[in-house]
Image (tube, rainbow, N blue to C red; front, side, top):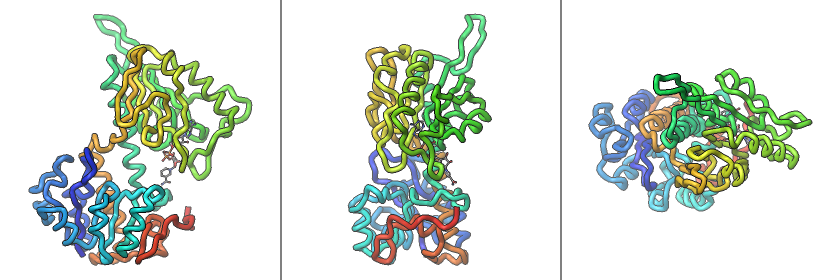
Length: 381
Ligand code: NAD
């Protein structure tokens, strides 16, 4: 069978779902590989590099979609791409099934099988296919770099002939995958790094990375706002008040705030309020990684950078992985390649779409003319 990757059509998307390296691995699984001309250009992969890796370069998107059995891409397909699905094709990409009824109906009507990368179950065996984590890791790293780019000072403290420079103080709110990446980046740049999460079990991890975990002055244990299956749940009013009181206390002290707090299937909680923004020092920077889900910060504008009247920069970009397209394409293409390995147990270039396999079942949102989303809970944890 032939697997192919078109150029992403979403405005400003620089990533690509196949790299020359991943193509070589896909060929070892028995597949022929194809790519649309120019698909890797914005991520630094030339057509010639693909050709050297044994990949057929096809001139147009229409030609590519027609020629292949499996389409691997990054963003959920748009209307034109959905029209290109057929009953003998498998699509592997982000698909946003919970908010893309139309897409699922279109794929069902076409009889195409769709694997949604955000639905890969978060179990140990599937970590190598976990594109949400690989992209969140990049977003966390890039959030710190973006903050540094907008902050007019050093992260690390210095004693120089021209004077003593204090280290920057960075607060990371939410210590999941993106938050932990941000913590690692911030401490490695030498900033004093504080981190908070409603899941107290991450405190040890935060401290082992050289950051300080922020504890609340709260009678009950911090776990009040905490977890189901590694994710956060909604907090009680008392817990939220204690959290906001602590943040209010920290706001005038911190130079950089990076927020990453999310609760599954809900809008992002507002955790950094207008009065906190107003009490920050001029020149401070906030990067709101929850911007796409409404934001953790009052004043975030999605996909924009705003500067408040008191000189605080709030960054609400939602395309951090695309801003590091070479890195994110390499990791995403590796996630796809591992998914293909799972789909090809015999390494014979033939897809075996085994709906008894927890990972494949969990990620499949349409199969043989049926919508198969949401999946049943995974059997193996
Ligand atoms: P996420 O993006 O849903 O949330 C980000 C973080 O925000 C979470 O740590 C959450 O606890 C935190 N948060 C929510 N409300 C908050 C609030 N009011 N204040 C502060 N923080 C708040 O989560 P994620 O990063 O995708 O993953 C969360 C956890 O899932 C990971 O830390 C890990 O334990 C688990 N996980 C497991 C696997 C695996 O086993 N393969 C893969 C990825 C993640």
